[in-house]
Image 1: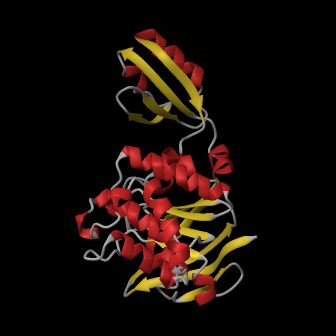
Image 2 (image 1 turned 90 degrees about the horizontal axis):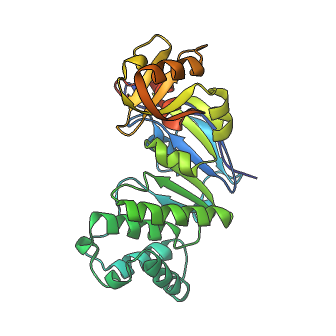
Length: 300
């Protein structure tokens, strides 16, 4: 089943075209990454899918229907900007968000209690939202996104403000939701998160689709000309025309070879001047593909 079908949508703000004739097809039960740099058009696309913004042209169907009240109640939306009421208690805000989607208190309260404990917010249940830290508010907003048990969950930068422990907690929950049959649209500019979670991706640059498909297929088409290399000693062997790009992470270097370059030749040069502790030919990371496709210039 197709959860979301987007056909030829465009959106302009004055003379700036944020999204240009974009097509998307998102299968139900998958994690779909909508990726791109800041300003690429991701949030505008999500807002059009959510019917917050109307496209200038094109069409959007969710579960094969145009957006309406019945479809909207099947969707949970976590915007990048927080939308909680700061002077209400956390519990009252979550009850209100559930009620908006038609969930009665006798159903929503047990759900809220379970999620508060799962997200380590149980002790803050009766505190005002404004008393919560930034990370706590992000977790609270996530609970509000899923409290009505939606089929489609749309997440715009869901890890914003979370420390590594809570990033891992939310990641585990997202995987559980997917295994339960939920569809996730996951928007981010952080490629490491997308690579861990997404089965399918769409990379947007300057409002246009650059890549679209299964992540495994996209990585395979970009070849095996990336190398993870850890060494001690003289690194001048990397200053060679066969090395198209190198990213130094301190503990290791990720090397992108030029087309036709021989990894074994690089290894021979490395061993002649340095002590090599790791040399691994790998498919390029999503971050590497991202940089190849959109470059390092100014975001639009």
